[in-house]
Image (cartoon, rainbow, N blue to C red; front, side, top):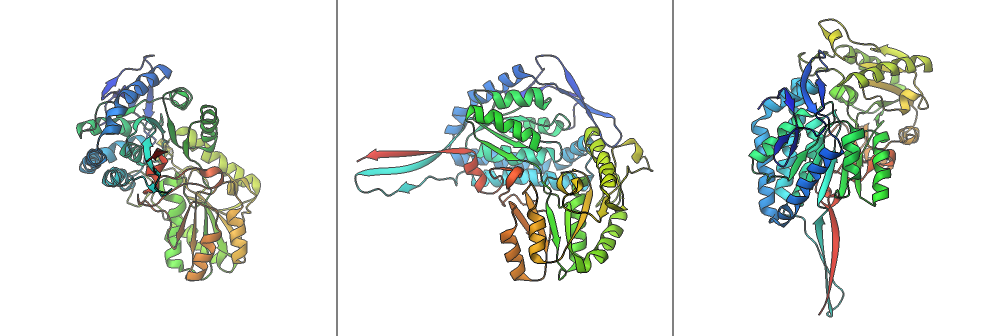
Length: 480
């Protein structure tokens, strides 16, 4: 299975042309060549997809959960078998180097295998109210769920929402980013081959303002799961509020990564570097605010800058390497932040410009970048840059570190490095974030619940907890 030169929407287990007949170019960020063309979706296309999902929902919801789970797990295993094809496609469309694509794709496969395995585990409960009544709860699907995903880890984040939604009996209409739609379409086609019934998973491509908004507004969509920017999440939340519709929103981050003076610096150094350069910094969880205790800030800053300078750049460079920024809009945004940093008086110690040489100037590459002399009120310390840019902020005491870490509108993740187990527990308890990493950074496991505090989101994804996020609870009371 390889990328086709052109894709229609995937509706009711077949590719269909867009109603308006329009297509968009998907651009390879490595060399700006056209990878494929995708359908420019409209409200009419969304209507077709939702109708297909609604028609399939009763039979899918009524299927025995164990049998549903077998199909879902089979989809995950088939993705694992075709890993190389999907990695090549995602690398071409999003620019992530091969090994980076492999890691994200392996996790995508794991989501389907994991949720396939626990699809039959969601149970209601008996509520004791005396001998004259029998009261119990059941968890029921919403029906049609809309899953809207970004471009930075396309299939990984799609599977994170689609797999649990399907596992509990919902059908899905997926709207991937217009920048990275190919693997979503390839996956939906493969899922049908693996046994997923027609209409259970549909994909409508196109811009968020057209296809995405139409999906959120559709009367027959019972829930939206969204991953992306705070701006888009806020707009989705407003529409959902008017509809009285539940949402799961996983949005931005400006996560702190705290390096205490007693940390094992040999471990903290590669960990802190990976935290902000992984996927070229295009990760909501990225540890881009590097808080370093003042007694070691100069030493650690020099070590981190030296390590960043050695990072290979290029989609075909030796692993681990930095790929391009995924699209031109985001690339220009990162370059603009270099100007912001200069105007704010931050000191650049490495990077800060477009990467060039060896053909890199043909793509959207930037050098791994580190700033020091940063204060937490600067824009580069408060706004999500979404590129391989780390800012180093000194702190004095444990209380100081916690205060700086929590002084943000975001709260998706945080990291801390220390040999003191008591400190690890104490600080973790006080950090205002949905996921805390101790003595490492970034967790790709599918079992851990993920979600944000503050403007980083609403609800939780991943793990067993996600199953209930895609159901509504019904209480049945019978007089005996």
